[in-house]
Each structure stands twice: as C-alpha cells, then as structure tokens.
Picture 1 (cartoon, rainbow, N blue to C red):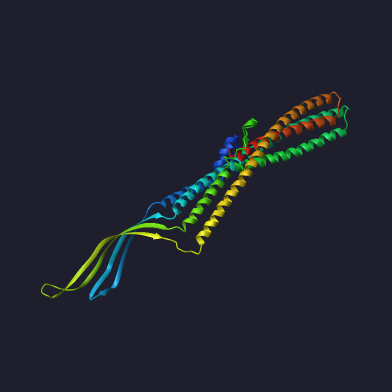
Picture 2 (cartoon, rainbow, N blue to C red; picture 1 turned 90 degrees about the vertical axis):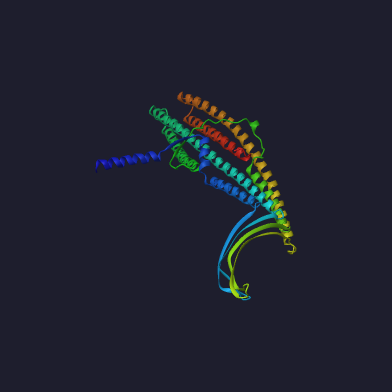
Length: 435
C-alpha cells in the first residue's frame, strides 16, 4: 500500500476517534443554558409568543379605519340608444377610494383586543412553563449522571479492596491459615462486584447520553460535570407560595378569556354603527346626437362626461329577532367562564399540595444526607477495626467481608441521598415557580 494512503487512513482514524471522544466540562448552569437554547418544545413556545404578538397587532388594527382603492375600465359595444342619441362607453374608466370606520360594534372590537392581549400573556406563561420543564429535565439528567459516576468510582474502589483481600487470602492459604472455601467466598464477591460495576458503567453511559440529548450535544460526547460540591439550603427558606406557578397564570388567563367570550356573545345581539366615505372619479363617457344651430339646421354634437363625486354614509344595524340564539350563546359562554373558574380553584389546591410535598421531600432528603454521613463514618470505622482484627487473627473472613459490604452500602446510601437532595431541590423550585 502506498505510504501516503496509509498515512491518510491513520490520520482519518485519529481525527474520527478524537471527534467521537470529545469531552465537555460543564457546570449545571452551562447545561441549563444549552438545554434552553436547544429544546424544540421551547422554541415552539417562543414562536407561539410571536404569533400572539401578531394577533394583538391585528386586534388593535380593528379600531382603525380601513382604506381601499379600486379602478375599473370597461369597453361596452354597441352604443346605447337614448331618445335618438348614442351613449358611447368605449374605454370608460372609474377610479375611487373608500374609507370605512366602525363606530360601535356592541363591544366586540374591545373584547377582541382584550382576547388578543390575554393570548399574549398566555403564550408568555406557557413559555415559562415549558422552560421550567426543560431546566428541570436538564437538572435531573445532570445529577443522575453524577450519582452513577460516583457509584462507578465507589465500586472500583470496592473491587480494589476485594483484589487486595484476595491476595491476602491466597497468602494465608499458602501459610495454612485459611481454607479454599475462604478463597471461593472472596472470588464470588469479586464476581458480584464486577457484575455491579458493569451495570453501573452501562448506566453511566446511558445517563451521559440522556444529558447529551437534553443539552443538544452529540450522543458520543463525554460530559464531565464540574458542580460536584453539593450544598444544602437552610430549611427555613422554603415556602409553599405558588403565586409564581405558570400553570396558575395560564388558568387565570383562561378565566379572563372566558369572560371576554361572554362579552363577544353579548355583542352579537347589540346594534352596530359604522361610517363610510367614498370618493370616485370617472371619465371617457360620450353622448353623441343631433342638435339645432342658430339657423335651425340640424348639426351633430358630442358631449364628453368626466367628473368626480364624494359619498358619505352612516349605517346602523339592529338585530331584531333570531329565535333566542343570541341569549343561548350568552348563557353557554357564562357556563364556560364558570367552568374555567372551577378549574382554577381545583388546580390551585393541587399545586399547593404539590408544593407542600416538595418541601417535605427536600427536608426528608436533608435528614437522609445527615444519616448517610453518620452511617458512612461508622462503616469506615468498623471496616478499619475489622481489618485490623482480621490481620491479627481475631475475627473471621466473613466478618471482614461483611464490614466491606456495609461500607459499600453506606457509600451508596450517601451518593443517593446527596444527589436525591439536589433533584428534590429542583422539583421544589419547579413546584413553586422559581426555577
């Protein structure tokens, strides 16, 4: 093979491998920002805000006069006979401009404007709601990755301890101080740890891909979290106030929209008043005929007509009878408004309960962290003592392996408590609308 081709293939492989193993060191804030910038649902919510703003502009335009222009040309043949004269409209033209101004529409225009403003506020609340969910998903993926990575590191340390214990057991067997059964027990424990480690490493890869998906990175990117120091907020700063929840804002806007729909229905049975003005200019209309001159002789004549005109009109439309359809629409709209209020009341209760539960979860997880720290300190002290006693021949291999298992469980408990606290903290911020 040509050396240049071989060099090219090797370089391509190196570049591909480097790309596949790209590593990003990201803080929680970095992941949040990337998730917000990437998420498709959030971008759609942003587009909905733009649409609502355009609808509001359209509703405001309903207050303003509408102006339209028109131009007409016509060629009519044959000529029209009018009492012996010929009306000729071959190339007649007319141009005009019309202005229409609504004066009163039963409140429909005002209600339409308010509905558009309500739609704009609803789109903003929906954007906040979607953004909070995106941030919460990124937080959960971030702390889940940290938790699994810590477990992988802990299991590797546990495996190293078992490797050391295996060598010690082999040595004691050679000295006649242990049995083959002891060796088999250590080897079985090694196999169990290897199985757990394999599962944890696979879980770490899945969590890494989940975080990559949330923040919009390539799935083969390796994320290295930098916010691994976990601090806990004081419990007295937690409040169940849900005034900032976007769900409440959305339902509140729905109540306002339902009230405006009542006004829209009422407007259909009220009079409407409008004003219009039209200015037109026409020309190239000819009247051909015969007339008498001063001597009484018949002579032909042609009259060319071109002129302009202004027409101003006011109109009033009053609904008289529609078999009660308008009143039925009003009643239906009032019922829908009442349903919207009931939904708001129910949701407010449910969200308050959710916030209270979130506070309990944060406080409980704080207690679990404290308990897990104590448990780890105790298991480490027990492992040190048991290891010393085993070396001195004062306890069995079973006691030492039990001490190792207790240390591993205490480590696992602390990892779950710490990362669980951060996840519950995120859920609390989401439950109170502060995320």
